[in-house]
Image 1: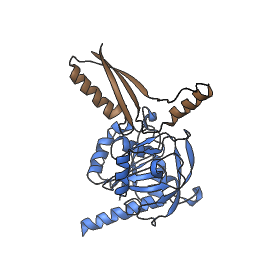
Image 2: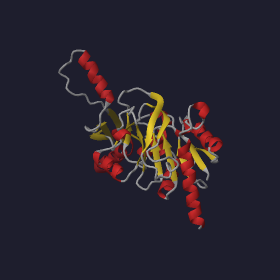
Image 3: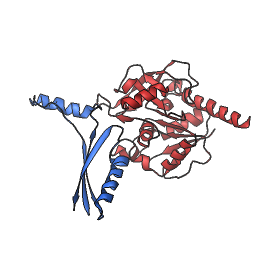
Length: 228
Length: 82
């Protein structure tokens, strides 16, 4: 498995993500500039946290038109694994790769704190390493993380089990305590908490590793399937 | 040439904490009769073209794809000959 981490102008979690993938979880990962137009040779693509294009207009609204995003759309349409964390989640909703939108936290405060979560769906490529209903603590760091979807979209998300992570103590007003979701096909994940910031005991915990190990399991499965 | 005056706002179903904060401030200023605050965005675009229908369709596309997030926002616009 080889991962691409997209660096948008204003991304600031790209190197943390690369560190978590490559040095901690043993998944080779390259930083790919948003000006690039191809993702050939990668098994997974990560859109990192930060403030792409200064969050002008809306978080993720401008980044969604970066040259690399056409390749990300094609990659996702072909079934490739795409993960958006924090600002990456915002970009994926703006790009229409995930339903709903991220609105200002109800408190209007930028919240930087550990967030206890429940893994509510372990049957995904991003959560199979966790136990069902496992409690994990991942850091959040966002001002615009309140997940919103209209009632019809929300009903569809729940019916299709697309919610992967829920907040135990809703910090930002997200509807249905939603912290992370997949698309209908299950190959695109968006989450506001930062798994890449919870991969080393020295820095407060290792609960985030599960996201990367899950993907490793999923891609191994895919490779075995192709070979067999 | 046309000038498009575009208004973007949250759907009524979306809680807007910034508008709520403004409303709280107005209440503190003793404007007790302010019942609701909507806090949106306003854009002006100057567009070249003679065909009003075509420009109107273009502005709609611009709003749908960039100026508004139709998942949580609505928009309307006025088109004037400029």
